[in-house]
Image (tube, rainbow, N blue to C red):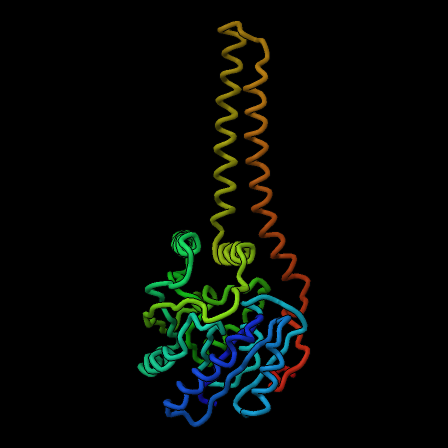
Length: 312
């Protein structure tokens, strides 16, 4: 198989026909001996899976993987990667914000000798100010606090080689952050710039809660900076407490003022207690991820598929 296209699906019945049409047009213009489209239904509650089954019955190059429930975007992509057969693998979302027409440029760039070619956004159409700014801040903060150089202004839209996929499948962590894992590998990587379109139809499945969780997965997977900050805050609070202790002794024995001060006492207790809770919360995030990995539960469960993975 020359090329596989992995497409996670969550309530995208309005976009699937248009997406398939545009992908078919793109691949009709490529000189490929074989290719496949691997759609992964991530627990959709609309008619997505029925459309995917219909397409797979009508076109032999269409495969579907129906997960038993919604496992999340990164897990759905991972399931597609486990079931694809191509020597070059393209990851693209179904909302058509990432144009399928860019695939030809990605593959052309890879032919020069790269293992990874990712799509870098120049503009983000159809997104609110807050979403654009928070995404911008997140990628730049992540770039500063991690030892791995993770490209900014990129998503999962990219093409990777089979050897990159082989290494990726050797990473067993449960909290997937694929763009970080791929960046961590090294190999020869480059990018193609493009303007990201607005969503074609339907509503995004990425709520603010999911975006915050995704950001936490990225930070905790590739940076110990939060733990270091917890230690620094501990030393800082200890220093402030020591100064307050000296002030209390000075007031008691020098100024002879030893009436208890309710305000200063409460401020000190609340401040120190708040810092402690923040530090415990940060440590808890890391411990929770360790617990998830130790349990050794399957990353996902497949309800039905016409494309068995290598382990099936």
